[in-house]
Length: 524
Figure 1 (cartoon, one colour):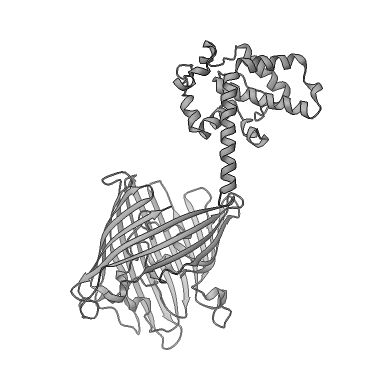
Figure 2: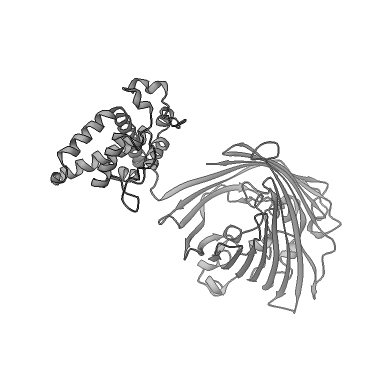
């Protein structure tokens, strides 16, 4: 019997009993909850009963209770109470009592082994012997269960992956096909049904219990629908193609600076939507959220550009949360060349105020200031013109966003966002652009069965509406998405859905494009 294990027992009699019952389901089967003050035993344990008194709880007035209480207070067998006493003011089940008795036996044996046996008098030894005889059945069962638990624990320790790290995986199998009369530009839309996958392995490590180091490996072969539709508006939320070559795509470390301040440092693959509240709880995840790229969350949360940087969240345990971040976009941070690096390349400054006046309502106001040497203002959400309005000229932009989530009941969630961006060309002629976007999402939880979610997302992807020395886009695109997240089990989710893009690329002359998708997500 290890001292570490019995140290867990030296908290209170109730904790001791709960520890043994929870640790081993077989023991839980033998010891049922007390009913009307009588501990019930199963048929399997009837053979261990040596006295009718074994069915009864040990009362504070019983001699055994008072004897053990005296031993506890004299030898300090069970620590944990401020005054060091046993607090003998309630009845104990016989297994609770046996756990306390066993702790006292261990303590006396320890005193004898360390040549301090003179501290133990003969009367106490006689009392212990009598208690052992009276509770021999419970002690035998207790020690047998503990020995079994220790053997299992040793086996787990010998074969565990790591004492500080756990592995969390996700695999996506996707079947998808775009269809419609024509692609953007008027040519025929010729596409085939595609079957693709994405696999992610996350290694989460903690060294203090309040920090987290994440290292993510990824392999995927999901080709963007843009290749056949001519528009990024049809992209899936989990696409990307490295021909299933596995690489580390994300490294970050998060820790608490104080109880109210948490920092996250991204070395690569940083995403604002993972670092701050994005106000779209049912659809933000790429593996279990919206099927489309635009339907996951507001484009203002894509301004990190999968880069490197730092995020600070200040939450004083009240209705107000403050967030701030700085990112060097893409691979700029690790590039020492002129025009790159952590501060001299494309970058983003971000700030957000989130106000939650009640459990049902949460509102956020966001701002981002970006500089991009190779413009992609909304990271391929919206039209190509909105992402690069100045034909490749270096661009500075101010992004303003408002987001909200309203959950009138646990089974219904309404969320939405609106954004406005002013962009200026840094090189060339004096040009500027005004860009708007918005969306709303409805999630109906437990629809059809517990854990399932029926979702509808509708909105307008980013569109250039005016500016200085720049033309406005002639039409308006609309994004409509319907999906149903079906939980087959705790580890398997199947999501069929349909994405409809009206007037793709903000051009009324372009025909509607549809994307049908069936996504299966395995979590492990």
